[in-house]
Image 1 (cartoon, helix red, strand yellow):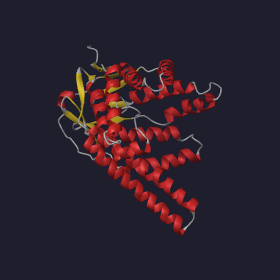
Image 2 (tube, helix red, strand yellow):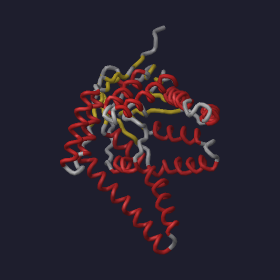
Image 3 (cartoon, rainbow, N blue to C red):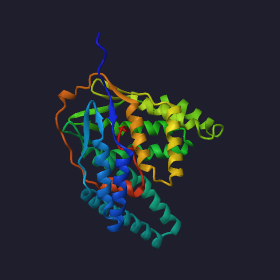
Image 4 (tube, rainbow, N blue to C red):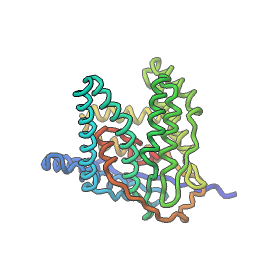
Length: 317
């Protein structure tokens, strides 16, 4: 019997090239009083996507600075509207209630909207072999996952969090498409609970270091329960390797006063690329184009709130 097909990503980006891009973006952002930052971010993504290949073919990023700039203006408008609502509450009720209202709306309404909108935008602007990705979940559906999950995690002092996290993963993976074909996730929070509790118990005795091993376990588990067609992903990330990567990255940033950030980004993407594979019949040859457009408002809301669903642009379905 023939061995199943195995597809691997490869990243060929260079820290020096990325540093030059960041340096140029920094000075142009200063000269334009911050406006060029949107175009600079798009340029960085085009470089990173273009240096990332899967099964021998590179990804392409199609987003533009103009789109994200318009999205930023809309996102600012939403934040101002929520701030105005809090002011009204402060006038007619109590100041502490106004603050509570503002943060509740921020966390339970804007944050889910930002996460869904950001994923919709990024995937709709990403292609591979000329076929676009898309995300088809809605913010209203995500509220049904996010709000009760967040509240239960708080009420149970974190014990429900593995279920919440797995449910969020399922929501974002199951509605992710490549052309007309969808990804699927069949992981369960119950499978994570024991390791999660162990990590909580070992957090203080290990000064948080056990968190790297738990993060690596969850990373492997999530990928191994993610499928595309008849193929499944496999991850070989280990706790020791993840600890070495992240601790080294932190030291590089401290010693260089942040100048090494481009090299850190390149090292991180390459690490995840080298530890990931898709095994089995993916059926790429049967995939047809089924692009879905999406505005950049959610993407810029995520930037405003300083949240990132996947922590990186790649390998975080």
